[in-house]
Length: 115
Image (cartoon, rainbow, N blue to C red; front, side, top):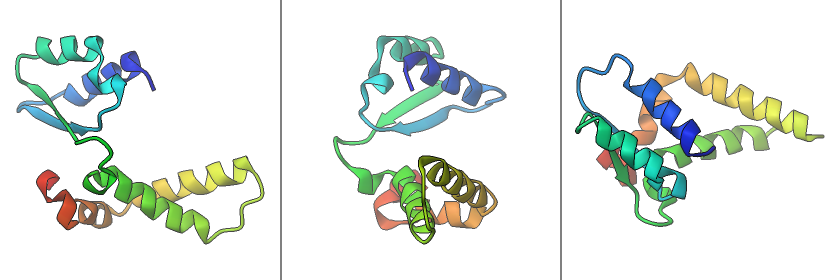
């Protein structure tokens, strides 16, 4: 991931948006890059980035996703990097089909701000 890739992600996120879009990000330098700041500014309030405090995985719903994937993968026998990748992708794809579970990550007490 780099700033141009993140900008492209944000651009795609804005397609069809009729109301302001709010994105919660961590403090990674990519999220604070001048390219990103300039892009967000160019949208005149239609995209807002909110930064999590430094090292606060408990506040990040993404961490709930990864914890779920790790639990699923750790139950399997892994023999290689390819096995690990296949299992992780499989767990993520299964998660895509479980919107109620994904919503529950945002209902964690620490993540209520994002719900």
